[in-house]
Amino acid sequence: MATTYEDVLNLFRETDRKFQETDRKFQETDRKFQETERLLREQSQATEKKLNALERLFTSQWGKLMESLVEGDLVELLTARGIAITDTTTRLKGQRADGGNFEFDIIAHDGAELVVVEVKTTLKPQDVEDFVARLRQMKHWIPRYANNRIYGAMAWLTADAGAERMVENRGLFSIRATGHSAAIQNAPTFTPRAW
Image 1 (tube, rainbow, N blue to C red):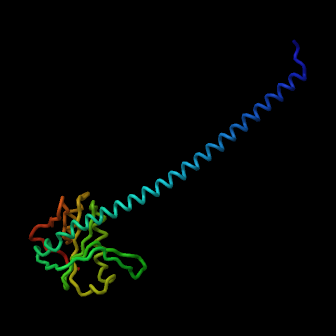
Image 2 (image 1 turned 30 degrees about the vertical axis):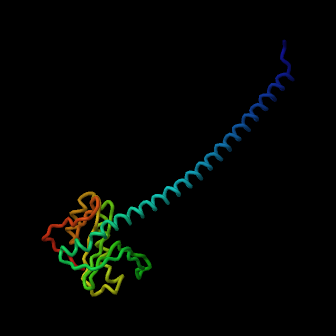
Image 3 (image 1 turned 60 degrees about the vertical axis):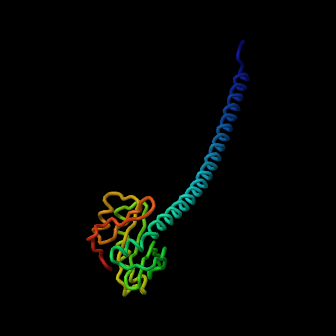
């Protein structure tokens, strides 16, 4: 059977129609993939927000638990070291002159002397440096303590990279939180630095 010009033309038309239909299906599939990708991205962002909120809640509650654990023994621990503490205050917050904020976890005081305690679940060397820098500024940030003798202490559950040695080397009390209480790790002969 001979193929006519009309047959060839019809074959080309049918092939072109199938290519156009295939192209339309590819475009539709691409649109569906883009829509699915957008939905997954939105769900991922929503999930990430929820996880971040849960992490903040857990961290906040864990921090409060650590602070309570340390605070419960603090008066007794410091009194045993010759600092006659009578009271504690937790989470002292304020605003610096430059507009930034500050917060001190626990302040143990007796009027003339006070011990500022930074509580960390995992103590890192940078935490020690940051805390010492904040202690240096404390009398400027909180003028009512300008005439007090201020000591520093860092309370921790675990320590990384020799951070616990840095605490003592910087003249700070080192308080380790243990299962149901806290204990000062410095030697009995340790003399804390005063700011």
